Amino acid sequence: FGGTLPTELQQLTLLETLAIQRDEEQGPKGPGISGPLLSFSTLSALTQLYLSHQRLTGTIPVDFLNSAPKEEAVQVALEDNELTGGVPSSLSSLTRMSLMLQGNRISTIPADGFCDSIPDWFGGDVGTYGCSAF
Image 1 (tube, helix red, strand yellow):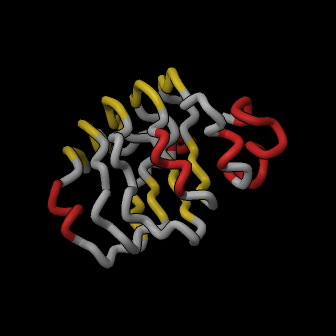
Image 2 (spheres, rainbow, N blue to C red):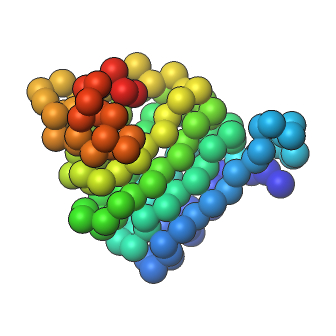
């Protein structure tokens, strides 16, 4: 299937998991999801977001996952899309987040101790390697 992410997804306030993935090892099946990444800023129960191997474009919204549970483990897989720009500094409030961004064109990571505030990201690799873990 293909198309853009419907904005109505932002109204599913009790949504805990959203998984739309293509298995790139077996070859792409269909056109995939394209267009901008939604902010998912109103989804206060979302802890698992899997949108890897799609054709998402643009930047990560500055209010991305603003309402996600701050004390819970939050897993976000956005590998192999066409995302550009920087990682929003607001994500540092999700201290137990696993954010996978490989295969995009992310150009900046916030300065001023951003990586020091998220040592548990990537299974503790940010705490060990700093921002190089990205």
